[in-house]
Amino acid sequence: MSKLVMGANGRTGVELVKQGLERNYRVTAFVRDDKVLLEDSSLRKNQNLLIVRGSPTCQTDVDGCVEGQDVVINVIGARLMSNDTTVSSHSQVVLNNAMKKHGVRRLIVVTSYGCLGLRNYLISTKKLFSRMFMTGILKDKVLQEDIIQRDSSSIDWTIVRPITLKDGDLSEKYWVSSDELPSTSKVKMLTRRDLAHYLLGIINSPDEYRAVRSIAGRPKPNKPKALCPFERRREAAREAAELARQQKEAKDLEKKLPSVPPVQQQQTQHFHPQPKQF
Image (cartoon, rainbow, N blue to C red; front, side, top):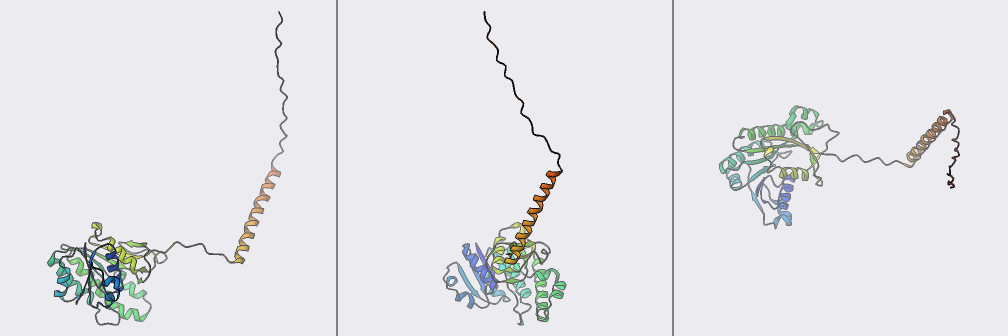
């Protein structure tokens, strides 16, 4: 299978490249800067990886990468403190045109969980810094989703909205929902490795075509809290007191019951017939 990763130089993009190669995919990594990928010798020497530098908003650059692909995964995103806050929507128009031109139908795009409720998300973002710079980025992500869904007749798209991402190990345990995620007590930040694992897993899933999915990490079961020496002694005293109470109740119950005389063993007489005399 041939796979094109748009935005492969980002942290999520690098994970998609690595896990795709582990599955023996032929991976084309479209990047604006190839430094991150070239620094990894294992990627640089992999014959199934083709690294292409270009601009995601240049139709000629994107056309050359899309042709011959089986699936396109787009994880392009704007950088904070930069002037490219509209790169997601602009590059999506270019990508859709290239896919329709070359007959490539399968598309998976990563946006943001904030798109589900842009206003609520921004209100709950307490830091002024986040509100200032995330507003423009999220609005562009919402526009990107609209652009994707306009071409539903030509593209089998899936939009994935992850919650806050972090670096971490692959757990293969995450919440996926077609609507809102569970309460915050049941979800946690999602690792980029888990996100990449999920994206690769839905490539050949027709049930995921023209679907919007929200995804978050699933917390580990709570382990019993270890007791300190004082708490252990207190717990042991509580258990001993409970046992003594149960034993006392049993004795009191025995006293209240009527006494039963012992059963006397009846003597059984055995009959021995006398032999007849003739």
